[in-house]
Length: 189
Image (cartoon, rainbow, N blue to C red):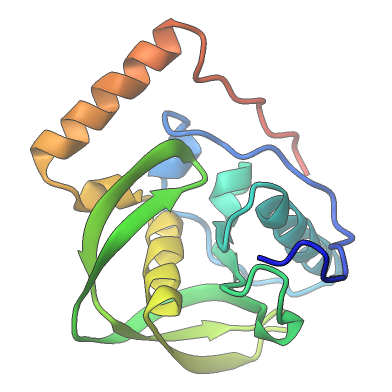
């Protein structure tokens, strides 16, 4: 990424990212029914938090808020028109396969190869509550699936083999015991 390029910085508040082990990540998030100024502020905060953590997607549970909201920007601030908000998303169609390295802001420092569909269609609501459908390919398809998994209380590691998943969990437990896997508890909104 060209760091000399001027991009508009997000105006929201940066929240700490909730790490693996926090129960909010294992719990299906609540459906969003109110589309008000408070929701708009939360969306701004989510983009700011995602950019601060150098991610291309973030689900509300990852900042400790159990609501079915995710933000995605596969261009990472390069093309603001590509920012996507999906609220109450549902995967309605998948096609093909892609394999690639996948990581998660809530499981930092770990990446694993994962096979997922290459083309994904999602039905969701936008920030104003209007329903829409969108199809993504490649990285965007992966982001739709990854963030929707978060909203359903699943992490990408649930798609790994039992052996790889257990190995990763053991490494995380060692980091916890050593005091190196610490997160700040999210503040209530």
